[in-house]
Length: 272
Image 1 (spheres, rainbow, N blue to C red):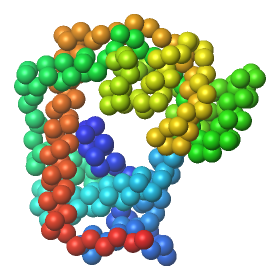
Image 2 (tube, rainbow, N blue to C red; image 1 turned 120 degrees about the vertical axis):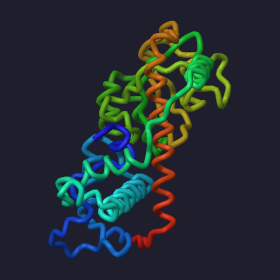
Image 3 (cartoon, rainbow, N blue to C red; image 1 turned 180 degrees about the vertical axis):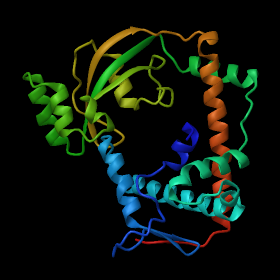
């Protein structure tokens, strides 16, 4: 299955129409077909195994992906594709859905002008320096202050992050890799780095740990791991990568439109 379809439909470990014996209430019903809770639970478990914290928004997204996948599967069955291939069962589900999507969502050709515009936009968002840093996030500011004191006294930052942080970088000991943004720091021009964290990084030295900072989600302490001059990407080097990215984004948008159209004509009931 191609990367686009994996991204948008998230092929699941348990098929939504598997008729396994279960007394659990289905998570949804699509045109009279139940989506078993076992399918939902399997995908949640898969996400959690990657270190992702599954909150209400993530759970809702999982449910939407299951509904979208069931809608596409029903269209496959109604299209006659199963008769053409001679099979229409769960083992062929992913391949047939991919074939259906490929038939209705064509490959997008990206212009050189669009590629150059994306390159220029990326470069405009970079500063003269880039920072590699790690972060620990907590909801309780008092608990975070106590944690910051332990780190100042010699506690291992990565170990504290793995134990206490609620950010997605927990499994990496809080490390977020390299980021660059223009300086002086201006809100809305931080290239995805929260403004207070970017402001702190701009004034820190490698190895330094910030005091507790108010973050978008609770509170955070940041450690600046390293600083280097920004490695500006050469257009010729990144051109093909940008072309592929833009083509995938355009095709993903078309896939969303296809699914939205299917949703408009579907009977869907979602369980609490």
